[in-house]
Length: 324
Image (tube, rainbow, N blue to C red):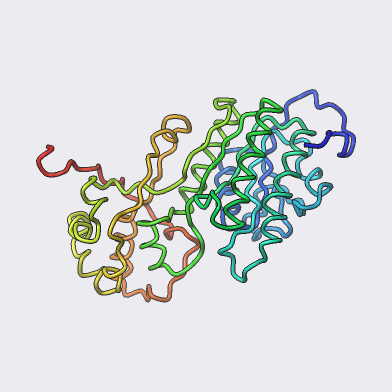
């Protein structure tokens, strides 16, 4: 990383600032994260190339920021106590963006954010990585490089850093959202809750460098997870009477995966005190309620999040037959 002198000079801050900067503020994740972070009492500075919707913008200060421009990033980060770096392009954006743009925003932009953080003395950082982390595409590689830059930031500054590998929560059709939860999907509200939990952990200095996956937990017994195509509908029926017919009616039965994608989230629960709250059974309950009201759910679109309503607790994972 380049010397801090590459950035505008600043007076030494004698008292610890409390402002949290959230990059990518106008994005799908940014809006949900801002609502939770501001609601938790943190003063928020929103940074993006355009402001979020008015109801979100009213929750804090907005600073126009293109992370590819160091002076923009400096203005956004100056005086902050913590940074939640969400700004990124991914290959699923519509309309699509070029690999060159993805690399510039995700890698150069992250470098600029971390350089500004180092110059400003930011000691708490949350970085939005992705389940796509790897070498399958330019986007995947940008997340590898982004995580390595965060690790370097931790080594160079001693800051508290949390890296969150989000699973998919893109806006789209309601029915597609439901089935995605069984594969690589996660509810946007769980993404926001995990991010707030990570912010609290780094703000308190409870972690050094912590990485976790942000995914869904359905509370299913292991045999249902492994053979969901055959055992899943019956499991849903036990929790939501009429579920089998409902899945058939909306063409979802044929889209169910053979096996549910499931990850060990125990470290996130232990370190961050975070657990996902929304699972497939919540979607089925919501679908049943909407079907009962005669709603045209085939036309419903959601922002990667179950429409807001009180949620019942997740089912308790049941033992496999013979293991009671």
